[in-house]
Length: 287
Image 1 (cartoon, rainbow, N blue to C red):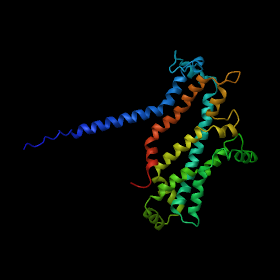
Image 2 (cartoon, rainbow, N blue to C red; image 1 turned 135 degrees about the horizontal axis):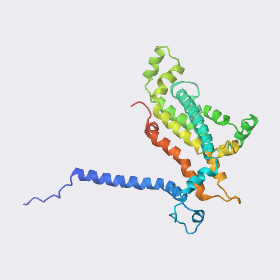
Image 3 (tube, helix red, strand yellow; image 1 turned 90 degrees about the vertical axis):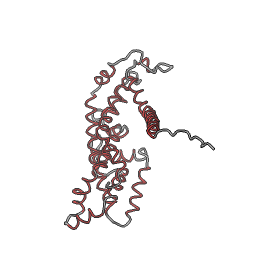
Image 4 (cartoon, rainbow, N blue to C red; image 1 turned 45 degrees about the vertical axis):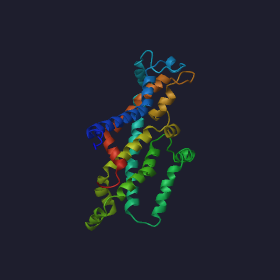
């Protein structure tokens, strides 16, 4: 009898290359889907007003209007509005990161009656839409005389954010108990344990928390529109309310050009701190 010949096996390296090619193709397609809106926004910023309103849609600008970006920058006090957005975003992001870390540390390392119930109520508050608390929030700050000031963002930052508290609580709960016990033996209180031991260990979560909070505030439209005057308002409100014609119609191409410049700071912050952001979202304790 003659032995049946088996088909030759493909080398493992060939399989690895094929798998990588498929993986990279899928990642490129997904990346294109996510970058599609930003690309469309950029192309809209290069069109004329007639092309943005044309039907059917003009996918590419017939004549590239680079001056739209200069017009969008010079038509309003772009740097002034950007400065207001930066002040509010930095103020809120810094305060809410520290306060959320402190609250998360308490839920993770301290024992108290009803702690689990309080933590459940805190997480449940994330399901409340912002629109429900909009009117009571305005009335409270109006009674306190804080409208058209930055104090609302200071108080919001000091009050902590439920989602960020959850991130810090999960991280601090994964740290070894020996760190805390050794510090107590050395005479440290819980305040010093938090500032000197736990907070320096949590830089990935600090980075992720700061980026999330900064993005929330930088992109917020409702609160600045409600609480700030025209001079103190943020860039998000200015883009939607100032690029209009005398008849009140939006100048779409200038709004798109301004929006591209508006998004750039967030992209730069993420590119600089992306390693810490990814590590913070995936870390639940020490490696």
